[in-house]
Length: 464
Image 1 (cartoon, rainbow, N blue to C red):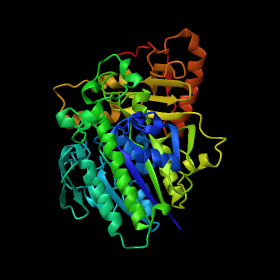
Image 2 (cartoon, one colour):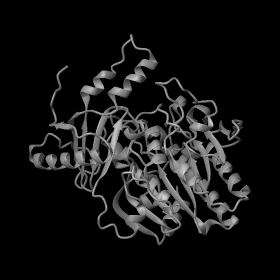
Image 3 (cartoon, rainbow, N blue to C red):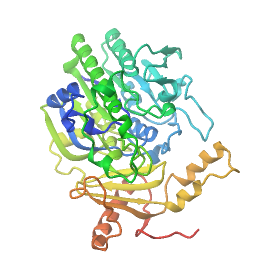
């Protein structure tokens, strides 16, 4: 019997908010239980530390530069192959609830931030829809709306994460067909509320989670950041996500289908609370690259923990494999089911692209973080009064897509410097290592469909 598959997706969630990843406060009892029954991945990373691009990778199994969705505000091509289209074509029902972030395109002037998403721009999800393209624009913690399959507005009553989960429960409870389903539940928590510049946890979060341990990396950045004002609410958001996961699991059990359902829990990227370069993410640090990944059901069972390096982009082929489908040749990375079988030849690094705050590429091995960037390309983005907003976003296509040359930017020894506070990229004692990592990075770029660039040593200055 083919399993039901649920992707329970969160936004900007650090792994250390979860008990089985080291959180001491009782934030995530349901996730911890899922990890005890299923499989937890200790070293999971995003392939693009920003919302839209990470989502494009997850829906297609391609890297962001392969889909063209390498910055926010770049729509997924309606003709792009997706996991929903493939599962729908194999008689799965497909349902999507929550934040999409792949319909609007600023360079083309296509904006669906607060309006219904046209059917052809929903990525192949068709049987149940409760979707908003930019959920942070249509909602707050205790108000908001999404749109259904017929483009009718669905208003929230209560806390946002509760309401989105209500829609998921409604779909499962009222499903009558015998077909298996693929449900993608995309929460925005614990992302900050953009227009209010804060995190909106459920009422009482500030008191309930005030006695938290400060993550070590937040104390070493060059900026103070905003975690002191927000961390209890951030944990409150994560606690709400866990509570709602528990509600969803209870519904599956009541329906009698829990044992035939695979639940994939993960996030698009992490968060360093503006302690690094004044940003929440969009950099190479583990605080924004590392993500939680817990899978329960099907072959993912036994309370196992894997320490191999895995990426968000390993999930699309995994989902296809779970559904009994072939993996298309255009997906460059392997399914996690291969790792369950033994994984002797599993990857020894993960590759990531950064294409919004800057143009950068990097790899992360178990010990080393190596990152290069293209400051000469980024210089093209200096805003000038002569450019309209649409022209400016059009320029991103040439400035942030890729480059034929990069400069070494970061090198961290993650064993001896887990908070990434000492950049070794200028250390002459690591010259040979940098050469080895540079070669490995180029191999990963080629695998991702990029051209082999020239990588210059740190300090190289390109001509103006």
